[in-house]
Image (cartoon, rainbow, N blue to C red; front, side, top):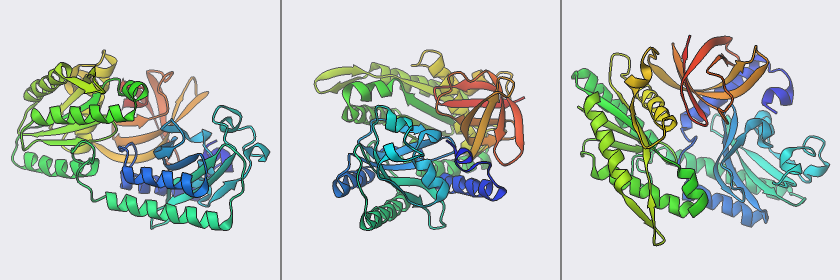
Length: 417
């Protein structure tokens, strides 16, 4: 159930409140960021203090609940309509379910009737200083139990401490695992480099790379092995870059580079050199050799692409094409672009709907960047989305026909027709 399905048709006030909530979440820039040991400690504390099987810190965008840190569940996200936490976000108040099997709302919920076997839930809002609920902090168990007023107060204090940790992380410049720049620091410095390049009429290029089959590494060898892979990838990249190049970690296994005074052709050669270096490397994990590859997307500064959001969107689209083309490849945005035009983008976080099948089918999505003629969308699963559809922005009266130009399992790059 989405908020609309929980409470019925949204009022204009609710639509505005949700838009403000998503804007607050976007400003934190925490979605899809790497794991953090500080948050891992919080969820372990939740398990110990309340003697529950599952501790959870999550963020909720327009279509999903994403787990920043979770102890007791193996998944990293779940569609918004399948969560208990959607009620906490919608009401902006704590919620306690002592026995879900006896609760009229949750007794038939898939998390209760299925393999997750959830019985107890206590969730409190994760609130910004302005009062916007960007996520939840939860204690969950597979047995029914009580939860006292004192327990609730402790969970709320933990939520406040989590928000303090979030705000502290805003100033972090370096990713603790790989030594790469954090996403926020990378964007800020990239903006500065783009301004210098535009002012001096110099070339500048952007490369996005994503480690191939990384989930398989985590699933088969464990997260510790995944960490070894990420550190090795980062080290190989650093060895092949100049001191003036920017190298940042955008997400779990996604990295980006800004190459000042480098044009498109030179950037393609650099991406190919990095690809070959990764392919040639053998990573040793517990005395076992592991070969790792990555897919690369390249974009360059132009009349249209002169801001970091547009360059990253173009490089992302090219990288998705590299994935779809068999992985371990380098693809330049110009080869994706062809007849598709895509102008400047701004980073947003908006609730969207993908409408198709003569308006009989709808899929919720989150719009992560938006321009006058294109957009980048995130959804739970892009399988089954047709090559063309109608995109609607909820509460804004915006609808336009879109054509998919690049995609992976959860991301779509579209141009407007």
